[in-house]
Image (tube, rainbow, N blue to C red; front, side, top):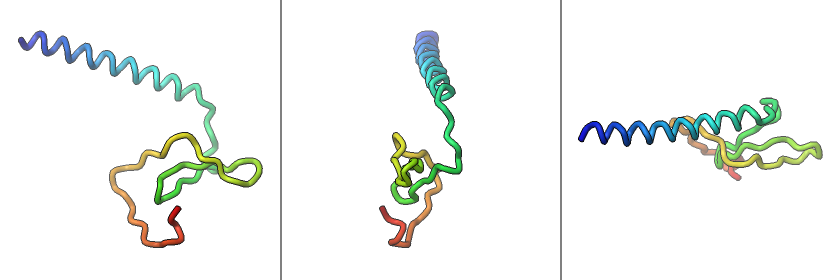
Length: 79
């Protein structure tokens, strides 16, 4: 019984590892953006990139943040 459980667990971990390796390859293939042009909205956590025309373009997805969240009290920072 334990052997079957371990085989299932091994298969699951092997598949997760394969998916993570694929994701790492995709991330390495992306052209890195300079950190100086990235900004993050503290309220909605969207990452924006300064465009050539001076406006901000929303980068795909939302930024991941650590588990400790900031409390925003100023209404001027709201989206």
